[in-house]
Amino acid sequence: MNEQIYVDWGGHKISLQWHPHKSIGPNEIVTSVHSYCFSQDKVLLVEVKKRGFNIPGGHIEFGETPEEAMHREAYEEGYVKGKIKYVGAVEVNHEGNPHFVQDGPYPLIGYQMFYRMDIEECLPFLRENETKTRIWVEPEELPYVMNDHELSLQILDEVLKLGIH
Figure (cartoon, rainbow, N blue to C red):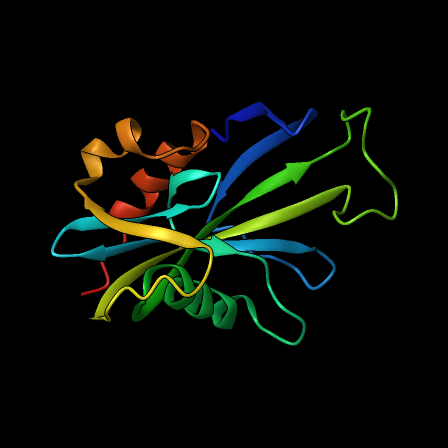
């Protein structure tokens, strides 16, 4: 079952729903990419300024594929490189959001794509971008450290099934 939750993002009530292995069609809009990055059975978390600890991820830049964006974000935020595998998508739905701005920065319905990365190269952490630090956390400790919504644990469960090795 795909659980639907509601979150408050900056005063906006938004519906989120996890879709494991959902195929994203050409008419669907992907707003961001995110990855659970593994090294020695631990997950990389990065501390993003003013957002706390979370997995690497961000917006897709013009001309990038989601996969290219994921590799770039993992490097920019965590200084890691590796193989990625698509896990699924979170549908971000603003239909019940009274503050939704038509023609604003986000679509009425968009998707956040999630990946698993098995890290092959961990480079020195240079703090050149928006992250302050990186830490390595055992998967079962993520709920106590990661600053995210409850669907993140459902996504983690799916990610753990997909070892790339």
